[in-house]
Image (cartoon, rainbow over the protein chains, first blue to last red):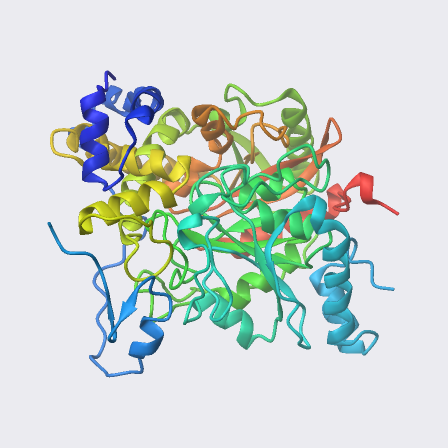
Length: 95
Length: 469
């Protein structure tokens, strides 16, 4: 599987990973080798086979809509890197 | 004097019941053992030594514990202290099992050696130059090293069965849906299951009984069809055992592993089992490829939550929100999660979805069908758990694909949602070999029965040779 430097940069952007320029080539080689190995699935002719997304034949599970205790605002913010005024503070969106 | 290397959880419970030891003495013995040997083994990331009157337990550090740091082996969760308990942690607590500590793992349970832990590898109690397996290697090292009577791990592609195998222990990957995933740091949700790592099959059944069952907080869980039975029988009469050719003859299985497993198969026959060969032609050939598309795809979605906003690590620096996310994620994740996020994102991206992820989901159907066909003729299947005994630290660390092959024999059944039990079945080059027992969904009681009978007949000594007094 020929994966290009542009592919690596594109996928890193989709995955929100700020890949340093110096790492692109190494990751291209590693991902290329892995994609070569997993690309093996294409060898099988499976056009008549249904996909499996879940190992148990469980159908929708319904429950009553009952209020129950949940996290307090204080607990929810307990691990926040930058809490402010009862909220999670973040930099401007698209400055 | 409590010999923590030799003591099973059942022995420990007997000491407490008879009053021969108090809860405090028991926990104290493990805390002392941790003080003596954990500097070498690095099984634990956090030691608690909670007081209590039950048999103490070690939990893998991707099992959320209220008020106790839970890192999943990642810098991106360093310093994170959960404000809630996972369902399994709550059940263990309700059962009165004090928490000894949280054990090391490959970052986000991605790996087969614990070398991907951001906090350094654990070491195998049988030979500290070797890995304990992974990703639940910390729990396995703790139990084999006498630093916990039993513990919980999690298994996505083999992360309970393989470390149990490499450390000479019993490990159960339960049927998907029998143990709650609520509060388990998510890796690949259609595969992740929590299960016990113990010294005996009976301990394993007892711990499984403690954690299994439906949980309203995880709608993929189901009620067990039958209560868990702690096994007693010492024969295998009436049990039909299949030997899947491909799982037993795959490339890369060491001769010493084959030898120990072949002896166990012969022993199963002596114990009264009907043994025959069966085939899983495409499950083994295509299982690994299928897994390394499905699991990274799910991981790329699950790990999107680590964004430096609500909890965990946030990278310093200026810029807008997107740049905060991207810097935090690159700096916070180690090499393996980055690789898997990239593979998963690629496999799910426009133009590649059908060829990769869509095709892998179809392969998953084929794997389930092949196993279902095998179980028409057989009650259980046997194979090696790991192709190799414990390998040297560093041996595979720079080659992700070589590392992935560690799970070649555990992955196929996992893709089909099947349970698997690994029990120690002998030594090769002085290191433990694991026997994998596979069954249909919800066949844990039968696997426990067979595992117990074989364990009694094999008479494997679970105390690492170099630590025997």
